Length: 483
Image 1 (tube, rainbow, N blue to C red):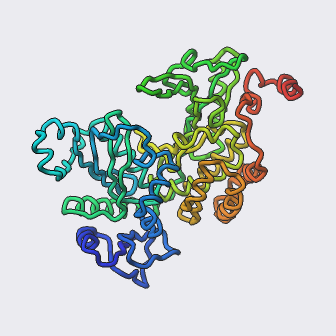
Image 2 (image 1 turned 30 degrees about the horizontal axis):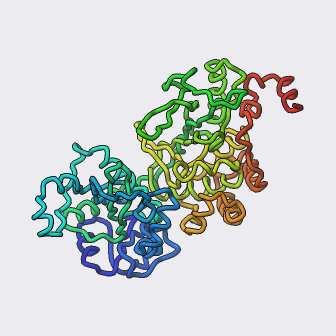
Image 3 (image 1 turned 30 degrees about the vertical axis):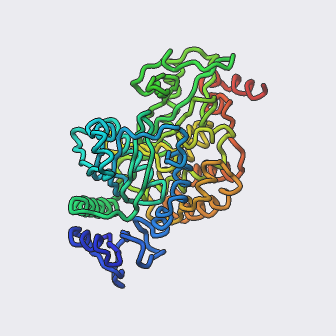
């Protein structure tokens, strides 16, 4: 077995231990050679040299309401403390059980129906809250799905891996995180669900540790079209939503959808260098689809206010898990802060929040935290190489500076001076990996670029760096540099 359930003989922990197949106890056996300790509760010793689910420090921090709400606010998650509306009447309330990036069950309490069904006398007579009712997946509404997403996001943001999250949906439609319990009281139903989730985690972990094949990488970076007059030209003027070169949406208030963003979707590859070549090939396709050469192609995070751009990276042939996501946050997203443009941070935290992922129909997932990184081939090739190296070696990358709330604040605020020393140590870990040498040409160039702290220019036309038409001829390129 690769996992061990560590507890202090709490009744809930004992019930859970009796249902799960993995070994458990109050002490880690001296001869245990497994990979991950799963903590239940915070009343036992921690093993700092062992990888863990639910770090004890994160449990203790999440149990303090003020600290918990401060961290959630940092990640852009709304709570009662950050709620500014006068009306706090809830239309729905949910309790969402989460384990390792998955919703196990959702319980719902419909506040609107309760008020409608109760007589005034009944409301005055009893202050007792009715029981939450389990929502079957077949009847999961928009609000249920949204509550599930917010619950998973809240657990991850707090440095946790499981818990019971209370979500409130206001009559205005806004969603608030009302409570997060990192050591939830469990009934028979929850005990079964958590035990099954622990066993699934054990199976997924064991399979991933045996994986020999390299991760398959894909991407769909976005860029913006800007006229010589400084006006955004919507990409759907030239592109459809499908294909290797397409347009992507931004959802405005009131669920109104616009399609201003251009998106490149190169063929995936297990070789990050080939992926970069495939990306350049899609750029050439885009020049034919977008014939107006006067339009500048802008990359980055927020080259124009109100138009956030993403540089999503797709991963398949590997296991989606919290360890990998946190390695990508720490070893990829955090270093990239050091070269982001001054306007990039405006994308966060609504976009670019830590651990942002989305499952894909092909069985893999996309990591959505990064801004669009197409400022130059050097940066792009380096990021692809770094993503590949991390995905194939993340078990050997132990540092997590982003577990520190101060470092999280530095990430969201773009505090490069605060981040630089941490990145130096992170890169030392990377250089110790056997796979680093294979990709060292691209990785060393990226390291030099990152350590320079020189920000990219979000107003620069990326076609110049990539030598894409009309800058594909040497004469045109040199002329543009002189200009």
